[in-house]
Amino acid sequence: MSLFPFSTRKTFARGVHPASNKSTAGTPIRRMPFAPRILLPLAQHIGKPAVPIVSVGQEVVRGQPIARAEGFLSVPLHAPADGVVEAIELRPSAKGNWVETIVIRVYEASTQEVRWSEPRDMDALSPQEILQAIQDTGMVGMGGAAFPSHAKLTVPKERKIHTLVVNGCECEPFLTCDHRMMLELTDDMFRGIRYAMRAVGAERAIIGIEDNKPDAVEHIRARLPADGAITVEAVETKYPQGAEKMLVQSLLGLKVPAGGLPLEVGVVVNNVGTLALLGRLLPAGEGMTERVVTVTGPGIKKPGDYWVPLGTPMRTVLDWAGAEGVSEREIILGGPMMGQAVASLDVPVTKGVSGILVFDKLNIQADASRKTYPCIKCGECVNACPMGLNPSMLGMLAGGREYDLMGSQYHLGDCFECGCCTYVCPSNIPLVQQFRIAKGILRDRAAA
Image (tube, rainbow, N blue to C red; front, side, top):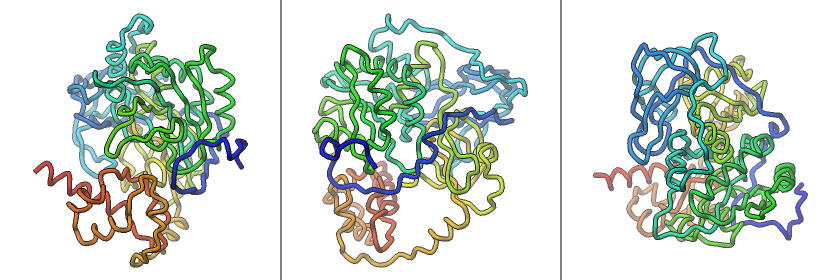
């Protein structure tokens, strides 16, 4: 039960209330050891893949740049451990395709000490220099989208930003990595917020946290800077409260235009974990070599939030967390609402992986027993859609392959695939999966 009165809760229209299952929220972050081999895909972000600057047989140290950014919408890559470059070759990714990957054989004596850094005086940097420093860290949005952080904080000249919204909602069930980072990396978070405010020119920042995390709200509120430029607000626990447009509406009462971005209403939104890590990396002049990942689910014996070196194979993570005895399992990267299932344990943890959920045989059998039935026109999906779309009609058009009509008249582009429609559908129609296919087909047609 929320400790905040309902009348004071900030929220948005529609949405759903799935079970939270956040049993790992009370356990401090632990550190995971290095795997014998680390697999680092060059494409761990939206945009152009990084370009290798090391060669096979070359020795590297923890924190050393090993791939450079390829243009503006790209970020570099850094070695997560001491070792030697064993190969640069195609390897499978979580999405199923094969991508160019740097393979590092880790030295057994490798320590957690970062051995490559270029400390900066952040107070002396201009906004443009801050953006360049952020790109140099290799940081991407840690909420799951993996959009390069410097690009998201780059504001067009014709726009004026008044507010930085810091997204601490973590509305996906099971995930608690942002929650733990707010509690344990509070000073780093405030530093990162200040850097981001300077980069975008915002005069204030608001940290939005769902009211099922009262300890995080009170912990941050007690440490707010005295100048009043940074505040914290509790918002209603409801999915997808952490979506950018929903959170802007909940906190500020501003509606982002259809097909638009928050910057069109003077707002930039950033994930709380992203800013906390930037607050740690930027002054130290270090690159992103690890991230906090929630490892949990019925198939995990040692659930919790872990500092996981980037490139750690999924097999290593699951063995360490106690899933080695689960023979039949389903693994989801991210949360259960918007995450994706992976078929191979040879794919690595990348910058955008916020969670690893393991479901055992009983969960898989229960899910497989759900049959799909024809749409009964009940309207539940319409009542749940936070964007006010008509998922039922979109689903019928997808079934008839009327993809162009979905985009031109029924605003398919406004769907951000939150999964609310699929969650509430009594006929178990995989609506969001249909929409993803339709979007992919429309993208291919546009490219052609």
